[in-house]
Amino acid sequence: MARFEPAALPELLPVFYRRLFPHGPYGRWLSYGGVAKNYFQLREFSFTLRDDVYLRFQSFGSPQELERELQKINPYKIDIGAVYSHRPNQHNTVHLGAFQPQEKELVFDIDMTDYDDVRTCCSSADICSKCWTLMTIAVRIIDRALVEDLGVRHRLWVYSGRRGVHCWVCDDAVRKWSPALRAAAVEYLSLVKGSADTVKKVTLSHPVHPFIRRSVAVVEKYFEEFALLGQDILGSPEKWAKVLALLPEAAGAAAGRVPAEEGLAAALGAAACPRRAGAGAGPGGLARVGGDAAALLPSPRRQRQQRPRPPAQEPLQRAPQNRWDPRQKPGNLRNTETGQDKRRRISVPLDLQRLDQFDPFAVPTISSLCQELDAAGSDGEQEDGAETEPKRRTRDYRRTSLAPYVRLFERFVEGLESARRGERIRRSDLQGDF
Ligand SMILES: [Zn+2]
Image (cartoon, helix red, strand yellow):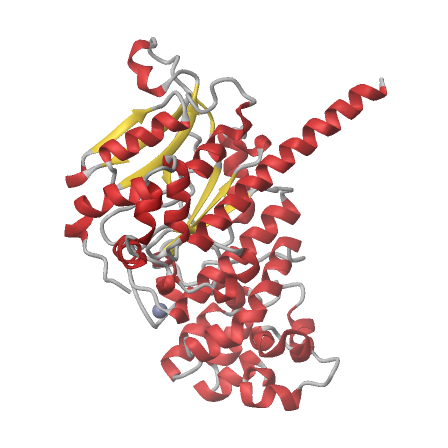
């Protein structure tokens, strides 16, 4: 794949916005069916241009007007802001205090740098296929909770193009949520507390909340592969100490009184050793249910001894808990979709049905896409002459590896649209009954 050359952006971005950017579904998404008056017109966009020039409070009369502007200024990055009480580009003409954000998607931002204390393969901005599993787990935990616990339906999960993922929750009701409701949702999903210096960031109370139990069930599927093998969390005495520090006090103290090796075995139980897990666990045993992922769960006997203390599930949850920027006010800006900045791949939607197969390194860069367009050749160019501009663009992205991602995005928009149709039919049926 062509390496991404930031210096080439001024040349590549016009091609990107003219031939590749999915203007059609983008406009359909943000219009939300055009049901609410001026919904699109009241939306704030902001653009980051060359040399970090930042333009806020941009707004447009229609998706077509936005498209023309994008093709004119070719922004490095697009941020989607809130829907305001007045047109954002006229905010200076409104008297002070009247200009207020009204609605906004609920956006979660999960960044790999937040997991530096539970990954050993990389740090800071780096990611690899091993630690990417953390993102997969975080997406699965949050998505399950959004759907099953909070009743959310329309989630647009996107790979940011760098080292994280975003989730845009787009349900009509959720976009209207107050800051207090947003904060409550984030609080519900938050388990990890404390700063980088806090050793034990998760403290559970008994009985364990169903959200946590279900999240652990998600984690268990990945635990052996990610933590025991990938991160090798039991690979050395130093690493044992880190794990032991996460255990509830009683287990930790017991382990501390004996030599490290025995202490670890005592604290983790026999199932902790992957080699022995298969042999040691009967068909009905704990280890069978959770596989080796149950290694850090207490053995049934140990659990009885500790009651009513919280069960030792903390280490399991410490690993891949979701963390994000809690600034969930509707006025906040978040970028999404195929926006560009300096060092990134294209930001693309995630297919939750094939999440385990997602490879961030296979996502195209703007350079690779433009090369693909070149390689697809000028064979299409001549026929294009007579065609309308939007039609030609459709075919352009279809000739690149962006195609499956645009298809996913279209599927998401179609989901919104068919839900709206269903709602209209339901309402007219209801009226017909009376
Ligand atoms: Zn890594």
